[in-house]
Length: 199
Image (cartoon, rainbow, N blue to C red; front, side, top):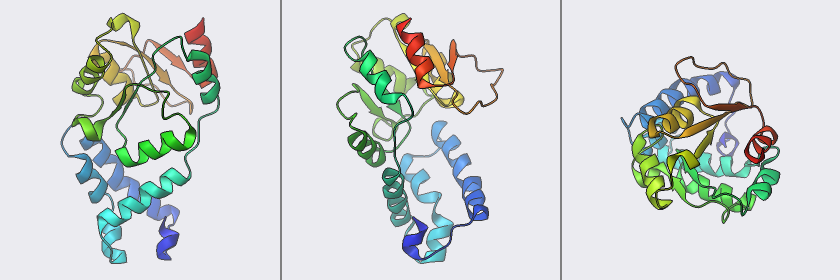
């Protein structure tokens, strides 16, 4: 992204960006700031350096993220195996523009229903409100029939626990577990998840 502005973005620059970005995501998940505030604030320093708006940088960032989107190994096989057997939906704390492009480019746009994007709902995982919104759109199935699968312990898994549904932590990178957050299941790959779901 920064190459479009003729700027070298070093590892040190990335580390500094993450020092700003990560706390903003926590604030967003906790409902302290809006999606718009997160997207503009994280690029304020760079916007000032480059003489452009933070919103312009954020748009460029979303385009760059969309350009490198790809499916996780086993994703297509998992979707094909589950298709027609279960209802698959998405609850994401991502942003509308990027999530829409990702689903279109990966060919999964029509696979998931409902598709719930926190930016549109006004609540983000782990807030129970976004899960309750999902349940309503799903015609309120029995909670014991729902499984929340996610890779983020604090938003996905804690959110599912808050909402009273079973959870499965997709721990691809072997992250250290949080003793205060206990998913019902844990898998290290989508292939392992497929075996679990079809057992």
